[in-house]
Length: 495
Image 1: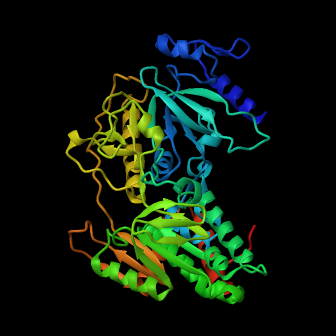
Image 2 (image 1 turned 180 degrees about the horizontal axis):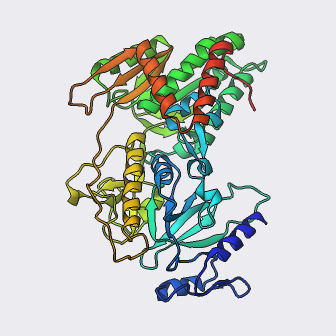
Image 3 (image 1 turned 120 degrees about the horizontal axis):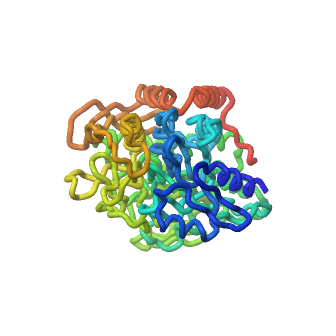
């Protein structure tokens, strides 16, 4: 019922020369500028937000609530734009601290910020909305996108509803998906670490295995399997999760689950070197610290994943009770299906101003975008700081365009886009557990710069993330969580 009311309200919002008649399931044209294609598609019975007309604010449609999309939403000038955000989640996740939520160092709400707080216009302005949906297609000629509501498999909700949204400016900020390299069984048996629900699943599985391992009559072999946590991928996410997990074992599990303290262990599997983008000295420090914490480091390539074990390229079988997969990200099937030129790695191809050059009024930022080969620029890494910087840059560009009279679709008054986007790397940080961290401030692997490791780096790591976390509300939550964990230990309730 709620979904139906939302769709009717979206339909009524369309103002101008005509309206959507839900009784006849037709969508009449809103202005003489609407194309025949838009009218034909509208008549197929999909409700939605129609095109803006003269005198109304231009509409920016943003697909995604990740680092890039959230920063764009935050900085857009809503005095001149209506904002419509379409995404399958209604919040932004501060991903650098996601690993800490898996073991109870932080609570899940501490690192999530609702879109309505990031951009209040989506809940207050009559022409701006947040729509819990996925974009399933785009028609650049008609300036419309096709969407389908997200129900997350809830039994009591309506069936997924389809609708259209017309745009003046469209921004793809839909991120990427975890790479599985086509290895059989990964999707079915491994847990990724990219969203809050992934962290929740890891936490539930970890605590369930701890409790099941206490059941009388369980064989030694099965107990060791249940309590074997395997992490695949030696990048910052994999290393940080391994460090948090080893900390959790050393400081909490061995005190509260003394019956099984000698069985629980962590294995980190990496095909090459862990933290390959960091300074050599820092990589060695991280390796030493992880080994001291009891993490077993294995160099190998996973060939097959089965329900209770995985198989490496050398034939070794590794039994597991919890398998976390963190091997980087790549273009999603949706991004690959879009009718736009692609960058060398399969992302949406953009020019130096983050525009999709083959169509008008379409932009792409964050992990779903990459520079076209014709620009002569390398594809930027899939990092939070890249995405956030792109969101900030594009918001500034769109605000200038609007103020110059070029906010509406196919507008003749186009503003000078200004200088192209330039990315400057600010450095990398990672924690390795036991109040130790790495800080690498070099601009690239080849350049020289400051690199630190140890407790001082840990203080820098925490201070930096506490100041960068999304809002003052989140900062308060994070600081309180860190304090309570220090005083009382981690929460091991399985809720």
